[in-house]
Length: 288
Image (cartoon, rainbow, N blue to C red; front, side, top):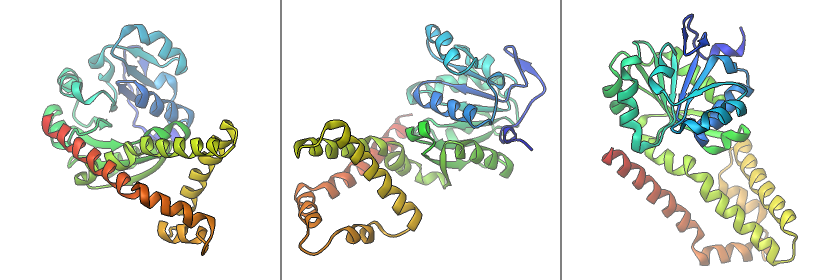
């Protein structure tokens, strides 16, 4: 069986799409990254996908960049006949989009939402109790196949639908199946986390320039150091403190730098960044 079985098929046609498998609503940065990953890993072909954008002037250029995927501004027509729908719109317009597409969503359709702070209960209420719902929270390293995605399934979602969704997101990185109650924290740690890491990367590179390194070399050294350190933590499973201690020799260079990090409050600043971001995610959910 080919890898394209990760997405259910339908024998019908809609919007000129034969055997349409997937509709992505809101093909902005994240939606485009995900669709490119699915296409590149052979989970579906360009002819089996449709995508939507908010502004019509983007349709032609986006379609060309995605190898001919049909792109329009019509969300309702795009989901019609698609067994799997992935929603990647901004949280502020989520309710409007759900109301627009609900009449075209049939029982048994799998709807995957990557929209922050939109609960399974809200999605189920808007789309109906017979629609399978999964919340997914990926991050932008999906662009290079290194995403971290969390999945939380609704009550009507089958094991097969959850597994097919897992396969979709495994094409762009790692996947964890979680309880929905953790989603705000996951939004803060892994979805917003790349922004925090890039600040650290930028700071390390700037420091390299300050001590005499060419900027390009400093950036490469800093990026590879972060990448290698992450790989070491993932592959060994060792606690970060143990890995840190392995680098830190008595009366050596590293301990001097660690003391400065403690003086600057790096540890508590990063903790507070995640805590504040999680609180904002919860606030957005309440306002929604």
